[in-house]
Image (cartoon, rainbow over all chains, first blue to last red; front, side, top):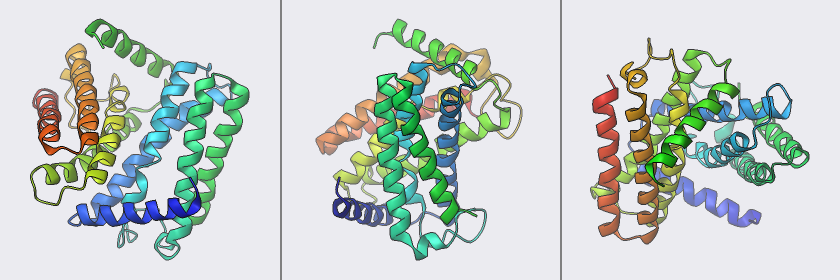
Length: 148
Length: 148
């Protein structure tokens, strides 16, 4: 997907979410996105243990988790709504100030988890490992910029 | 999928999860499954508002949420781990005592959300509405039996 289409998609998504869930309270948006990231961590953790060799590599389980992760990557963005950076969140207000960079990083997260899902289907750790590392780096780069 | 395959899948899933996330603490499993259900609610809410006509039906948004919901439906089961029914959860210990019924209901949840995703793609509310109601009833039947 080229960058322009992605930006348009992100804007459409944000607009449609605002229209549909206008009566959502800030704490609900915070709980929603926190819930998604808890699930991301739950799925990603055992994948990391397999990549590092801390537990045996199980191709079926790894693939299942990679699919879950790719699906989850599409969900958090709409939880980062205006006025939800005050408390009970480690998300920084800079997300609002620099929305486009944040949305772009979320797009990278989606692209990289989709690539990891595809690599996982190969069952080949030589393909999986770099794809996994790319996802981990996307997480880190976003946390460094936008997480307290 | 026939019932026997589903039971085998559920057992395999449970077994593999136990192997891979053996060092997960009970509260982490509780937080994981709660996070998933928060996301389920977030996705399902606006869909309900559209089905009921409380907000305008937006085929693209409805479909996106239906896809998210179908993906989420595959995730909570592995969070219902032994020893995670003591506190900070409204999940009843009867889940452990009657695991097979619980796992079957989760399978219905997956089947019904997959059907709703398909109906959503039609963009036809006459197809969507009954599929939506079927999902809502699956939620309720499980809550009635297994939620405090």
